[in-house]
Length: 68
View 1 (cartoon, rainbow, N blue to C red):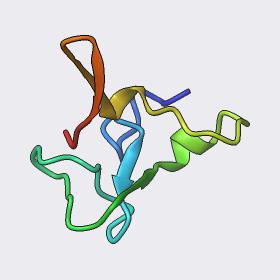
View 2 (view 1 turned 90 degrees about the horizontal axis):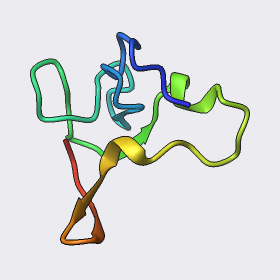
View 3 (view 1 turned 120 degrees about the vertical axis):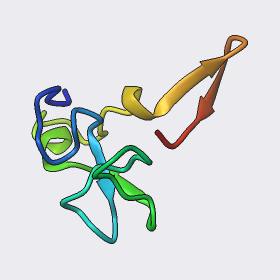
View 4 (view 1 turned 90 degrees about the vertical axis):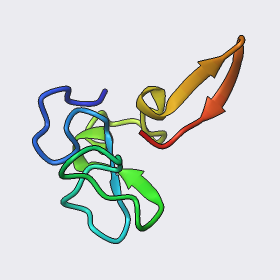
């Protein structure tokens, strides 16, 4: 489970692959110059698959991948 208080990913659970100390977001302090990768807080849940709820947006009932 993603740590909603994580100072690195700002609670998103994902960071920039090129800058892993920045949240994978267009918001201030974030970066999207590379692909998104799970933040350390998103890997700490002991599961093989990272939590993707923070980057999935539902549009008209259909999941759509978005960059926040």
